[in-house]
Figure (cartoon, rainbow, N blue to C red):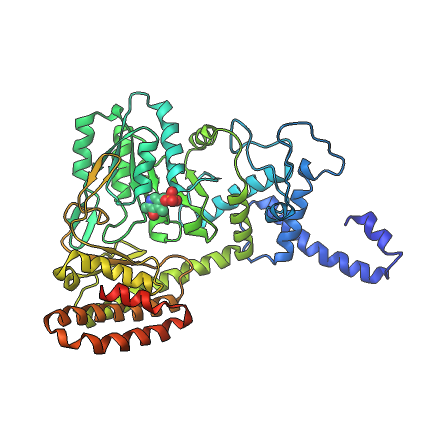
Length: 504
Ligand SMILES: *Cc1c(COP(=O)(O)O)cnc(C)c1O
């Protein structure tokens, strides 16, 4: 309500009360003004009423919500369902213009403002999370893999002769496919084993550059966040190699924003060498639905080129979701989540160490991986690869999600490329293992339940193995353990599935 409306209101309700109402309203508006002026994530969490007021103000600035609008174009932001309209806070026009995802859309001042603001708040968060010298970024409504593809396609125009991408191996399909989809030939660099850790083979990369010729290489595509026992790539050294040979460098930072270590690596890499862009998932780092990523970098002109590669307009949903999320958390709330994640990592690590001891296994030593941990599965693996895989399905049946078992010697062909030892980032990693991660949003309670269930599963497996030798003892343990687990999980558990899973 503006001044005139409030004055009109004073004829209906005592001016003293109206004045108080006006003050109350002003405190919401102050927050909105500060956000627009500074373009930074507010330190304190916003109340939902402020966020809703703000979004309503943005929406009425878009032409689809003009009261007197008559649309005669082919895209007028008409939405048939009221539910759909509400789901998007009446912001229907999306973001960007046909030639640039970061451009202002004349039909939609509110959506354009939303887009610019989201990118600006995101830049602030990336700095806060550890990449202080990042200069630009933008949110794209595509997940990480496709966003990497967009970066590679942008580089293509700058390096017409290049057809190879040098890629220190990481066994995750979407980052591999991001290169294939862009039409390039990945040159897979095997990792080197140092202790338990798998690390970047810098010498192999140097000699590959000599062999292929720098001008034939589109870029080096490195990775920070990954499953242990692989650890983040040696970004500083890679960035120096890229600078030396004038080869672009794209970093897959899929879930690295949540880790100060991953962010520090990017900051250092950019300081001592060359990083052209780094790409991160919105859902993995900011607890929003899957569907968005942030492309960031240190050179505004290059980032603009990437945003101009995006053909057409784009969905505003990922931008809207992440802006709402950051306003609801505030910078402090986000920092608290990061802190909690880090503490839970230490807790998970300690609990896994104890569990390993109880079960005659070992927590692999991977101090350079700040998010993911790996527990050896030597006993199961000694039985069979199938026993390792079965542990995975046992955990899944017990509603443990995200734990990943890696048996030895799985081979997989992706787009004609054969990966020996697939999942383990290595042709022949010495042992089978299980991964668990402390990712943003995890609670101590998740760890406790996981450890309890894993412990039980490992015991069941061990019992099952000895039962094979002495067939007499199976029946007894079976009933007891299943009912105990059923209690554990409440009524959701399908006991039959557990039995079938365990004893077939
Ligand atoms: C999640 C992830 C990706 C990308 O997956 P999207 O589904 O495209 O977001 C790529 N690389 C790694 C290491 C990942 O963890």
